[in-house]
Length: 283
Ligand SMILES: [Zn+2]
Image (cartoon, rainbow, N blue to C red; front, side, top):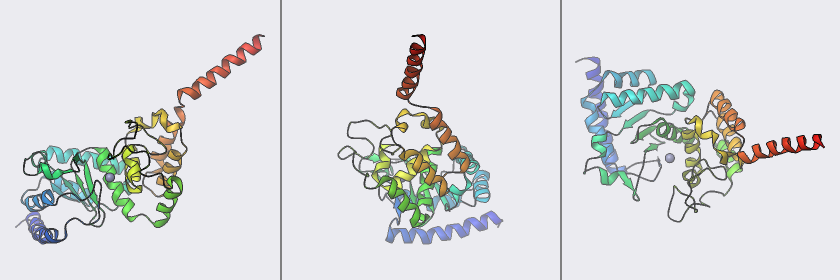
């Protein structure tokens, strides 16, 4: 028996215990659109123990994160690249992540599993289990992974962090959302508003934090004009940097983008002032 075989056998035994536990307890501490099914969870727990790829091994060794799920090595490599990208930007975002379950396309689209991967008629990109330090990834992208990792970090964040976040946002959650919707404002727009980077962030403080972190990996997003209508964006980013959700380097880059892109109205005022000055000097 090789070392890996040994590891896999141990893992298989551990997984069987977990399957039994999950059968009775269900998901604990799950954060996202609510409590999803345990069916894919059980599927991966059982099947993962039979295959190992060099990439899976690298993920587990380099990041100290247990990998479970899709046996397709190309997708595992995509995940590995994303983890490197996050690590290079802010290694502290990975602190509480013990396991990543990458849901496979084949399983995701199977008629057996698909109905269970929807919650309230909406499909979700991923979900985090704070207590277990596990993130489940359905849509493989840096935005989704950063979002779910942020949930894990938020789960462990000190009370002072949440108090300071509350001081910025107060009771503004769930205010302008369209009735019955969680991802659209009441005027059908989805633009940043009132300090929230996307409407989904207005559902709860934890989704607010996670949507900010997801967006922190889209540099162009911060050029959005709407972000100049409230100082809450910069205040929130400052707080997120203070508690290591984003690194000082990320904070500096985002802040510069925000400040280097004044909205058109402001530009117009500057331009207009300039023209007025020229007219007055001509007189
Ligand atoms: Zn979320």
